[in-house]
Length: 289
Image (tube, rainbow, N blue to C red):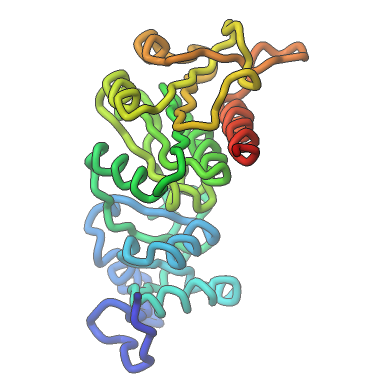
């Protein structure tokens, strides 16, 4: 549990202190705000809600917080400043030009955090996700070839709402956990593990060995998502919009299902299809004896 902030800690040279840029001279302020990043930070997140989730649930993952020094931003960022100081995370006041540069031009809402990298071992991440569930049958989401970070962020958000244990994606030719993904996910990227695997087909075979039923979505499947049993250990497998799942991914699935379409459009956006499929699983599991 983080130690509560002691006002005497302010301006000390340890974690949990506040560093203010000098009142005069843009050059000195720029040096201060970028002191821990001679190059771009290895991993950053931004946006008021995602940063709040990080500071409340996983403060140990936050290395440093940059907050806008503008007078207009002070009131809306006051809660984040208090959370950071309580968790003994360094707070740096920066001007908007510095924040724009750190966020690579994306809308940051006046706050950016540098993150401590997570362990990058997929097997360890999956094991931890299963352990966190206890006796509950796991529900997993597998995304094959989703390259749009906005779609991935939206899928993570739905996964969090549906209680998914982990989201599994291939490491190559797919979106990873970028700052844009974190922002779109609105905090879900910090609560749902995103597991990037080198060989997706092999990972799917490993899941089957664990007793996980693999259900893939396909427009030409004879059964619908509403006809398959999703109450046990299951992984929903979706491909990219347009191309769908790759051949090896499709062949690894135990069953293929479709989402019935009544209108003129041929397919749903992958993030919308993900929400439909996940919440059918949620509906079934809530009625499980």
